[in-house]
Image (cartoon, rainbow, N blue to C red):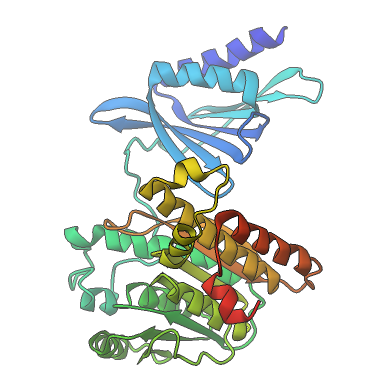
Length: 394
């Protein structure tokens, strides 16, 4: 039987499962297409405004992208995907699993397996998610006006509650990857009202049963007093808040340094403190990249991108990327492996970059190469200096 005939047979089984209300989901693997970071695809049936659609979850290396398609359009896309891009696809239905696979020689094979007690298909577009920080019985969430006394999230706090959970979800695998010994010392620079600081402490100490001491550093005394009161009410004995600027606070030796939305060079001050404190993990969500933008405006270097950066909004975006790119290089110079994620923040700042540095046990052998890359980047964009570079004396 030809490959084309087998692919058509597999697609027909997919159509039949949808038509007969047997369809549960599909998973695609062994991607061989042109999108470099795409790893997997998952499809389920959903209802959007009472219309059945196919929800495509494209799983990339560092992010997920969700798209909904009418059923017929979705089937057309599935037909293309199993013919060209994904070499393995499994159809899950209420009665059986059907696996389509391309072997190394390019030949298609189909296997089937009967199943019993298959789960019921979930058609809700907004699936109920398991939260790492559940809302119930959290006095700090009530004190912070995220939930009422019954643990119900206020309507106007839904975005903040989602942000809290996404933040903890991002940090969870990073902290778990560290060589944890004894009490972990974490410092949250610019902790503000403490939404994220409280949630992280609660998760590490009460869910992971980790020995942790967390200090929130905040310049505004009223917020420091409020947070210390809430921490006392919650019985969080090793969580405390101090009044200080990031620049003036003495971190000592620490395990984890966090700084979310520290404005402009305050992010550099935080990274500097983390490097000097020999932190195993440094996590920052930078804000307001003004210092490098001013340098680029002053330098006015002619290069292949000058047609872009003569426009203010493009200059601003370019300054953000250059600033954080240089921060990542500097972290690598000091022995950190770097990762950059997109962090969903809140309604006012929908998306931010999360710069992560994880201390490597290996000696950095290409320091001169990194320094040359920093110098070349500064020359290319007409940058006299980077604040973090200056702090560290590079």
